[in-house]
Length: 399
Image 1: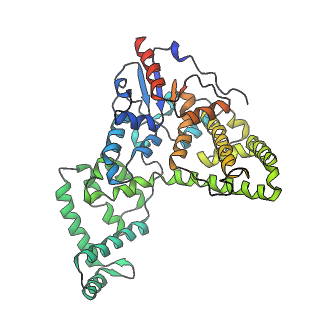
Image 2: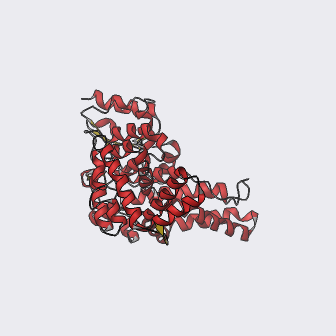
Image 3: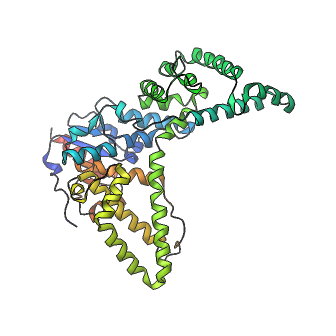
């Protein structure tokens, strides 16, 4: 496979843009590596993307402190803004062909919730469940509880009495949060969440207010420590939705390969693998994967000029081959099993789209090997804390 990009010699530069996948950020925040020693260096600029934010936001209240520390690190003032998400990056690559790093930099308000949507029915379901749980906790008598519930819920909808009850409760919450988390208050006021639930404000208006209120991910992560705001964890999970969609691709693909393998018999694995390799190299497959990850349709010749997305497609193909070797090879004990995929695998793959645009890219050893097999130079692709720290120290010493 041809080399994609020659890059530039890292040791020859006095200013470096650094992109590290989230594992390094997590270890730095917990003082397990020395990266914090370098963040204030004037000739090192650390870049982050929406993927970092997605992976750092808490998924449970117990993760809050680590989440705040990770997000505080990537949101510090000297960070290089935020790099556009993988979808907008693909659009830039398709239109400008070879954009520069400056073209990819955006404000955080364009990164944190790029595709967020609110379903009134889903939120209403959560409110109903919350009301029922409150009644169960406070009214042990089943008959009385059912009577009260009938006054609050009719045919699955909130009654005026329930709406008034919720507004009274939210009034108490507003008083308590006014000094602690003032950023959250606009969501509780007129035009906010409860007007949305009652159909008095639109989804678009609520999304705009949500972004304005919770645009800083450090603030969002901090809020989930409060018992009244723990539901924000569910909102942060919205950001994982696209990751989960991508993760569903692989099991379906691997299981189809397993079925093909069973049809040709146990001796036919080399044939199946060879056929898969031919398929992965085809223009149809590459453009289909590019569309699935980026959401835009590109021709094969356009993809050849799209450095980040093209590298992602190649690396994804290598990843599939690895999973194929584990789950579609009849000589392996895991043959035919449902592929075990980690949500973080999708994040690791998506980080790769930024590799062509920075001077130093940090990932794990498996990812660097995929990048190498994809035909990309790996001189500036580093895989452990010591290696990264040594390179950074050399750049700092040149100033």
